[in-house]
Amino acid sequence: MIEQLRIQNFKSWRDTGTIRFAPITGFFGANSSGKTSLLHFLLMLKQTVESQDRQLILNLEGPYTDLGLLADVMYQHIQPQVLDFNLTWHNSHISTPVPGSRGRSDVESFKLHSQIQLAENTIEIQTVEYLFAQRNKEYRFAMLRDADRGYRFESDGYRSKDPELYHKHFASPRRFHEFPMELYQSGAYQKLRYLHELGASFTQLMFHVNYLGPLREFPARIYRWGGERHSLGNRGENAIQVLLADYHRHHQFQRTTKKVALWLQQLGLIQSFELHRIAPERREFEVRVRLHAESTEVLLTEVGFGVSQVLPVLVLCASAAKNAILILEQPEIHLHPAVQAGLADILIETSQRGVQVILESHSEHLLRRLQRRIAEAKLTPQETALYFCESDKTGTSQLKPLEVDTYGNINNWPEHFFGDEMGDLAAMTIAAMERQIAEGNQ
Image 1: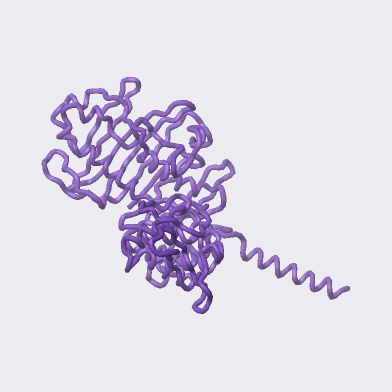
Image 2 (image 1 turned 45 degrees about the vertical axis):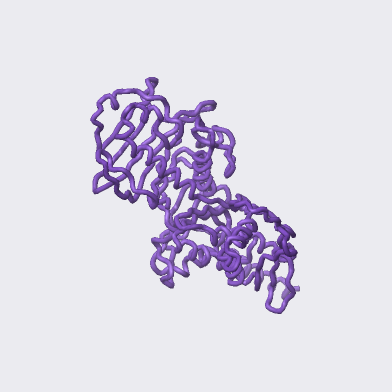
């Protein structure tokens, strides 16, 4: 799980400050306030880690986000400047070697600090630094750029018995989160094996990230099952394929499909949902739904658009394994307000299975439901991290943590958070009175 993030000099963000993440982390705010950029920063890290190009320091144009050119990700397009970020995550996967010993122990959290110099046509790593605590002792391992002489290695909490390690200059790290391979080939690899596992833990974290964008595919009348395993896809294009895999793995139980069907029913969208093979021994399937208990069964393509748009969200939540991280852009899009509120309950249920949910939303109804569940003690303020994003006159984004108490109240509600509702009501009342007076004088 991601615990904290701080970014400096990225797009509209001069400095985000330290952002606390929780099982449910939500970013709200006006259009072009910078909230989507926070999600896309994480997606940039993910597609860099997953890239087959081992020389790629940052992958700006990948399968999850297209950020354009280097100049496009620089704060206010100023160049050169340093992209600086710190990311802390909960290590729930592996025990790591204890520096200076043959033993291993669990590390609760790792912190990666990276600095990358960006210019119009060049990108260079300045710093790769890992910090963690183990057995009540704090450690720091870093590779720092030393002007034109290359990179030098530093460590705190552990000092290698090979003094040459601290005087030697190394080639550039290949990626923002890795130490140079030359370090492991220096003969000290066995003593520094934990350095490799630091990068491996971050890589594993990024592999746990799943993304669903705001634009989703239209449903089809027929789906063909070829036996392949699919991820959901950024547009939810493989949502039915994920359910078909569930159908063939657990023909009698269909755990994911039944969960999705139950949620659709709870949201009040449809009464029943099932995958139907169009003929015996055929690999073609239809998705049939029933809107009401007594209504005729129809294809998914024949019901409201909102059903097909929320379906990928539900499939992703139902199929997510423990320790998965879900990044959702506008999960409420095309949904009725009541359904938006119900979707918040599904996100809460998903997070309570050990899945982290990170979302960007415009939905007041979704936020209000989260507040209600906190007031009902079904969710704690610590299990949420909610933020309001806005930009100042210079276009610089600002982040405001929402202060939610144990009764669900937001004690620092931003002005015009979701528009000026009271102002509109007052203006409508005044307009109605003026019209009545004018009509009475005619």
